[in-house]
Structure formats: structure tokens, C-alpha cells
Length: 241
Image (cartoon, rainbow, N blue to C red):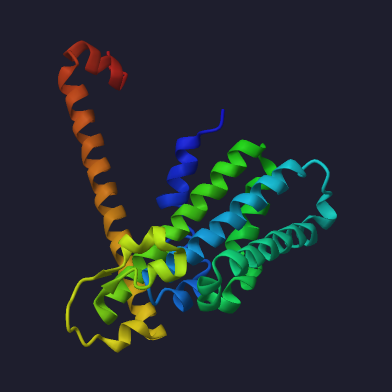
């Protein structure tokens, strides 16, 4: 049976597109000058990944192995074109800000990687969940990185959210620091590299802490089970007697 909980965990944390697979770094560093841009790019990528996973899973028994990669790229490019045209029509301001990086979603390695390694081998529902979770994990990193850079760089959070995402997102536009002159380095690409480095270090630190806790818990459980055993059971366990 498909373990949907593990699929969700992989997409958000254990096999995150950025922090584990180290893919899609070009759009990550280019568009995350603000959290708004990161959110817009993440949602667009999620829509493409979800749709491509579903379509490729549905066609997995029709597409032959010899031509699967060109067909995958053609399907992904078609979906990206639809997303690009839709954003240009309904989210024109956001489309202008993200610019060339929307069509370049076609070249995003993580989308083709999930199509090849997962969607082409799974039924539609697991493929959809995988695309949604991988996209959600990517969006999370985009928003976090964009938010950190925006706060340090300009003292705002989700700046111009209403202009780019619609009036329904106006509540996200927050000015955290009044009369803040900003820290230009964090808005520049070099600031993106620095922020990403600290983000990766933080994830590694959390993973190591969790591993240490799990090992300590396992040792404690082993000691407790040994203490609960009688002498006779302990000797039988060791093969003595």
C-alpha cells in the first residue's frame, strides 16, 4: 500500500527539492528578493508539478521507454505554457515581476526528476500527492528565504502582496521596521547565497538533533527491555544455558 504520510514527509522535509536534492537553485536565488515573489513562483511551480505528475501517471502505460524523456519534456512545456498564459492574463503584475523565470520552469530539474522517478511508475493519486507535496516543500523554502531576505533587506514582509496577488492578499503586506534604511546585500544575489547557506545549516542541525534523540530513545528502550527481563529470559536471549 502507498504510504501517503511518507510521501508528504519526503516532499516537505526528508527529500525537499532545495534543502536535500539541491535542485531549482536558479529560480530560488533569482526571485526570492521578497516573500511575495517567492510565493508566486512557488505556486506556479506547484501547479506545473502537480499537473505534469497527474498527466504522466495517466499516460505511463502508453508512453514507451525509448521516447519517454522527450515526451515528458513536451508535456511539461505544454503545461508551463498554459500556466504562463494564465498568469499573464489574471496575474499580470506578478507575471511581469517573475518574467522569464515562468517559461524557464520547463527546465526545472525537479519537475522532470519527479516525472521520471515517481509519476511514471505510480498510479494517479500517489503521483498527484507527490507533486503537491514536492511543490509545497519548494514553495515553503521560497517563501522562507524570500521572507528572511526581505525583512533584513528592507524591513517589510510580503511587500506589494495586494498588487501582485490580488486584494485578497492585502493583509499579508506588513511593514515591520519603520524608517529602516535596509541592508542592500540581502536583496542582491549574494545575499540569497548567504541566506540559503544558513537555511541549509539550520536544517542539517535539526536533522542531527532528531537523529541523536532517536538514538537516545532507542538505547533507553533497549535498557528498559533488558531490565524488565528475568535472569532466565536474559540467558535464553544470549543463547546461554
